[in-house]
Image (tube, rainbow, N blue to C red; front, side):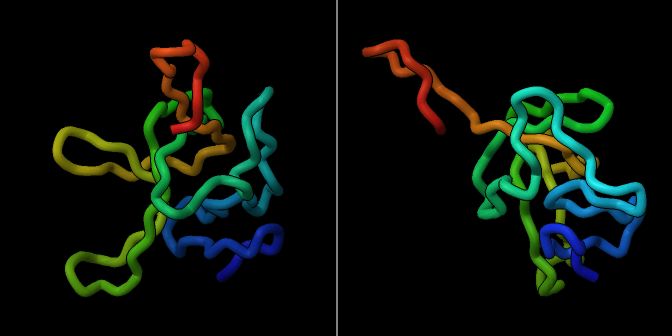
Length: 111
């Protein structure tokens, strides 16, 4: 099943919310403040900062998908590193690029 808003696949597991824009039967979830909408988040495994609906912030998350089932069960979602493995997190409602500081100029640049 695909999201009617951004056309991202909606997982068949609960909660059935769009991983792209947060759409559910209750509608789209708007990102807070200066956070970007999830429909614009990179889905190429690029690391970004995400915020959940309850305000929890993960400073180093990424989107991943492997539906082949060849080496592990199929998965699709947002993940964070926990030790030597990754854990899936709830559907984020907003994202920001990760920033690192340039030592020679002191201005942050996208990672």
